Length: 379
Image (cartoon, rainbow, N blue to C red; front, side, top):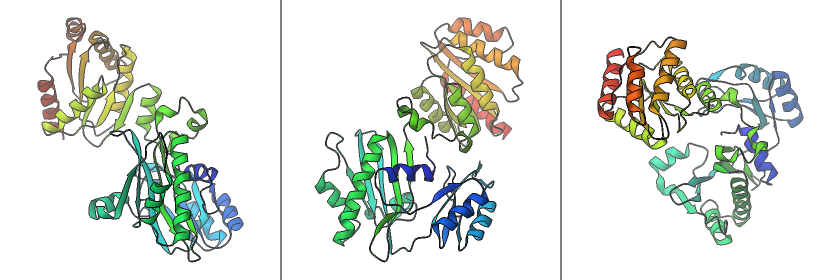
């Protein structure tokens, strides 16, 4: 679950990390009131789960409260990468001497949180990693012991040579680690972490991603989810208990099991196609899951073909077949459907589909290559 910047700032502030004043506004009048309270030049920032806000016109400087209201009226309602901006963050414009990056990410291979710090902050850390990887210092933290003093010092000295600033950075990194561990984060970053002309160290921006598995244990975090800022198809999938991630291709995939779903997407690429999604209906044999899966996929106008790849174990292939039949009776599917079924109740599944004039196959390669060919023909 992605948090908005203002929500991430709240978690960092609660941990004691120094941030500038400011607040979130849903109307131009609210933005004007915040700017008047804060005083001086402010930054009006779109709150949306998308990068490139500045390039899209979603970040503007305002010298007066009236100008803040004007900028807010322009930003609110605008669309950035397909997402509508419903709120803006209004914060003081800071005088910046230096910019750095401090982030924590969960490394699932080592099962440890990993700090990444760089004195090249203020820009995409991915760009720094690709072009100048030597500017990034990485350090894995053993969760049994936490961030040890000598480790924090090593990270701080990678950013600052001034001892006062290094000590401030040590404290901030310890606090960031606490936020990361206490809230089940998969990512927590400050970019930029700045120094001001008077030597203070301040967090100017915050990004936090919380592992969805944490939300069942933490209803206080679950309420922070803003579904209006998420891809509608992913929201619909979550409500239907489907694991779904929207991609940019045109081959819609319905698969049972995450491993098979990954293998299916790999095979689609192998045959020259592009998957439109990752969709795992799981091990349930409920035909309604298939109906919901088809509704979600057919809502994407870029999908030119739908590929079912079902390996029946706990999932009964006849239930999947019944779900396909039910869905095509409930609503019109305007793209071809390629079906591969094998495993539990396979023969019954084939008969169900044949009874309504649909065909299935048991060979995965044949099904995927056919789906890719149909997608290319329709493109």
